[in-house]
Length: 269
Ligand SMILES: [Ca+2]
Ligand SMILES: [Ca+2]
Ligand SMILES: [Ca+2]
Image 1 (cartoon, helix red, strand yellow):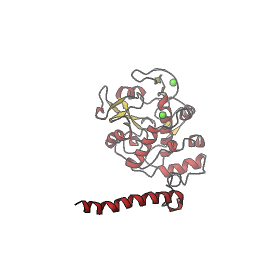
Image 2 (cartoon, helix red, strand yellow):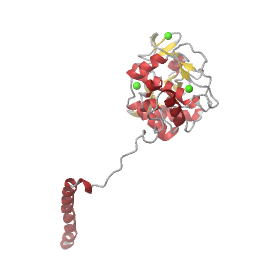
Image 3 (cartoon, protein in one colour):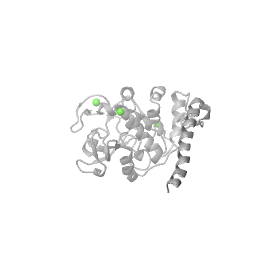
Image 4 (cartoon, protein in one colour):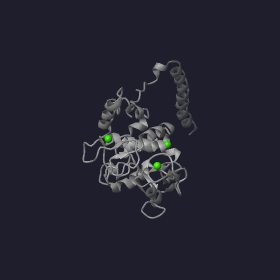
């Protein structure tokens, strides 16, 4: 028994010794390490046709790139938002856009205290409703408290107003809504994504930002100058970037270019 153990032990010791020697050789001669090909970046692949462009040429190129997507039904949006907006600190919850509240994924619905599906590009601006299309595009759909969603309504975005009850840091007046600082840039980049994605070449209106409030049912959302400022002040963070990646990997297979390249806001507008 003891001789067998020695028999099997010897090769193990020899192997360990060889590894030490090999490690020494590998570190002395880097060429011996198998070469890892550099990972292709999004610029090499997804955005390659947009690079180097600006203005309307960039917008047109991005429109073509991001229009290649899977489209969800409005009922599929519920489950998608449970993944895209999951609380990084609690996988049972989602984070609500304006309130910032972490709330149970299962607390969705239409009653007071529930969360529902906020259209950041208000669906009456261009009257696209909840048919599969802009109304179900989760790049601009976010979980929000039912009552706060109702207070935002279809208002354009601008600075100013009175504090919104139940949503610290948000303000509103008769014609506009100002989200809390942490999501100001997110809101801007969602609006600008919609402007590039929807150009009137499908069954829906050409959505475009302008510098007004009170756009009503026109396919416009303001105010562009304020949204540009918000995008600068609140650059993409890990939550927003992760959300873009989850949409790309698991749901729509398209991206929000302004999260990947915030400088393209100024390059187009
Ligand atoms: Ca206002
Ligand atoms: Ca943010
Ligand atoms: Ca457009």
